[in-house]
Length: 380
Ligand code: PMP
Ligand code: GLN
Image (cartoon, rainbow, N blue to C red):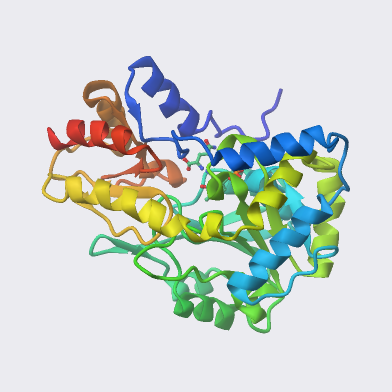
């Protein structure tokens, strides 16, 4: 058949995990925890199944979960989202991203994407008939940041929406209040929509806060804001997430959602709803992951790897230019096959070949996994 996505191959996350398995490497590539979730969460889902929550829930999600999300978002970001009309439960963030794009992008519309970009964004825009317009992040003094003037220069009469991601995969950068203010200045008096991927919202370190678009009333009124319980509760395989959006945007989102998945599995929704009422579960995440980040950074502080800042997410990027001249893909492959530690080349998050000599490690791992991997990395 004539491919709709001729340039797309199996994702780098699947191919690196496969390579890691073949070579019995420690997998710090694909982003997922190697430890289990809180047993209380499993118990909560089990109880939901036993209580008969096993048939279709309402299309936008189980009311008790939408209410729990509204409560959390209000507590954290002082934002009021109506559980009936402004919150929709999705099959992970991936579906929320795709459904938001399908709901608002018309054929020929331009969508601004900041690179490096999570791998699903661009193919999804293309499937909707949209045209991705790429804006490279600034990379100076080993730090990534968004050049808002450059982004503003890419806006045209065809720009339908802008996709942002903070805390940012893969760079670990997170937006400041000033970043959101710059974006608001750019968008004021336009009809441009915003899709804000905030799946790492609960992983921001060093006492900093996550600046959610939800906390910025002016931006929020034009935004789909996306999160994922997979990240927050260490259950990436459950594929449950949600989208917050004002009523009119939610109505359009749901038109697509109902034919995309219709609903998301009921017992997980009910189980998560009860578990998340205890806010300590997400409030403890920054400390939990900061400790892992610091184990990782301290162990490599005196190595030949140069560490990039990591303000958030569970990813640490490193510069390997003192070790090798290889391309990022070659180096990540070498690390996996010869050193026994899998990583992801940052070039996989760019459309055009971009070689900053960076690879990304995932530190959402048990201490013993991290220590075993670090021992191997320290020997390079
Ligand atoms: N966005 C980003 C930035 C991610 O890192 C991920 C997870 N890899 C997703 C979206 C997808 O999340 P989910 O597994 O909930 O679909
Ligand atoms: N989001 C995860 C990462 O960046 C992987 C998700 C996936 O495998 N598609 O590693």
